[in-house]
Image (cartoon, rainbow, N blue to C red; front, top):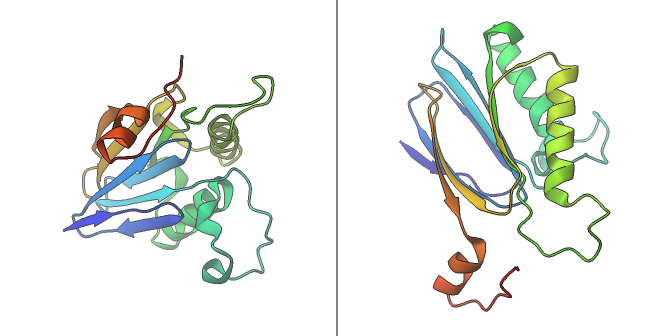
Length: 171
């Protein structure tokens, strides 16, 4: 089965699935468990959720946020009887693909990475791979039944032009 994950979405499955997504400043975290051959991935756009735990997941779109997406995935994996020490975690994305007015202020991509790393540390998760930052976007394919990730770097300006959109080239 194949799934394309859009920004603000999350996918968890024990059925072999290839989940594809394209990341710019957004961050994806994957969790994989070998024992149950179960994998999950999120595509979060913003660092911190302004909503409390009482808010509805669907009503407030908490999957748009790095912190709440990670915590939601952890709850789902723990509900399947998977302990944190059985989870293989990978983090990808957080590129600086948008020109910034002030280089002294962290970009959205940088903030997304910081919150993801902070949440991973606070939850004492085992980070297997980190491919974050830089100035190029990423196209990824995540295999839920093996935890494998295929990654291709994308020049966002080139991709925009190929789709007929004018963009200013970064120097």
